[in-house]
Image 1 (cartoon, rainbow, N blue to C red):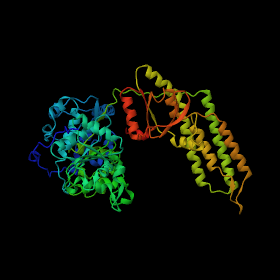
Image 2 (cartoon, rainbow, N blue to C red):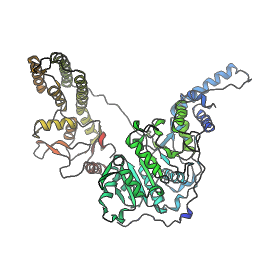
Image 3 (cartoon, rainbow, N blue to C red):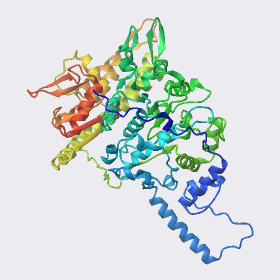
Image 4 (cartoon, rainbow, N blue to C red):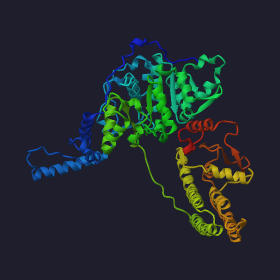
Length: 631
């Protein structure tokens, strides 16, 4: 395909000079932010030592030495003002987001209602001086493919990349936007700007291979058809005797974090994927984009203690240090759930050489000792320095209701019977363990694990009739339906397949399989007290009796297969899960087991195809599990 992306028709001399002015978080800045935060929560001014009061929404008044005591009337007015302020701040946790900078008047407004934390809304971004319009075509701005809000994120990221930190590395930018704001579109815009300026190599990390198609879509929507290389695996395929094919020496390598920490056997020795990416990029002179999408995957990094850090966190830190000139973009809606999770974000310039904090630990101690208020001030300082943006969709037009599922008499009886069986199993298991003199700690841990899985599946199954009724009501009203599941129960289904040699002609009760599997595999019958191991007759009889009773129990079917069947089958329901097979109803109305990827498709491609079917309206119901939540 012809490369329609803007190329390097911009002379490098037009790029603004790299700045050595690095804003740092210091005592004065924190006190300044404390005053701003105080104004946001109550109009009073106080220092960092009074953060606890500010963060809890209390107004802390500091009496000036020698000032007259307030009169009773003034006290009453002050109390009334505090009550009004408290009510106002409780209602304005989030405020409508507006980028008032006239620089962004060229872009169209974002199509959704976007809000920002009230504390951040009180702080403006720094002046914009980066000439983004020099690289982006006018048509892209007028068409609305990049909203003004997204253009703002792109511009400030590119502007931040002009900063060189005191340690010689390039400053990074953090996009903390929530779902629906368009983080992928902003990343694509950043890459487009850099590609137009002659930087033709970029690396994009994410959590799932599925997201590669989203990256290609976002780039394509912007008219940027840069080659997206399918990770290190495609680099391996395109490496011939004389080296890598010229077609793959430029472009975007899209890789998962799992690939980053892996290695490949080459030339009789292991070579890390991390080193392979560094070699492809050109090493320390690489100045393209280094994007960490869903960067919270690297949050478990403990400085000076690699044994306690995850491999992903160590790899993310290492590749940043090996590529000091890279234009780093951190991207996650949950990247700073705790200040300690910032450890891998070295390019933000919050600690280290030339800052108020020599090490990350110094920085962490200072912030954590002052509580949540200090964390809010940190976010405010980062935004004012042009390092961070955090916007999210408003719930103003969203509706939420909690549906109470009333159990039928049959369901109540089933639950009571199940509880009675588990109670009897517990008693019998205790007796059996004492009779055979078997170690009990591991058995009891397995017992309670199976007990938890059983009742979790049972509760899910009992919700199916109500969910089906609500879904059908919504479909009749002209709406689509999305159902989320925490688990698919695939392991129980696989075990049932093994037990019956794949000969399944009906729905499988996952609850029954969980209970029977525990009895068959973990209920002891062989005595270890005697020199010769013999079966204990009481234990054998108890095990047989329990198994027989459970087999006759009327337990509900697998909730996922039951939902799909009752809502129209696989032709009407888009299933986006991680399981390989399922029970379906054939054209003859008979139930059978079949693989989801019967035509040899990978699960990632299959889930993307199912998503497309739902988004295009071919299927009006979608069922999503945790395993496919990033699709």
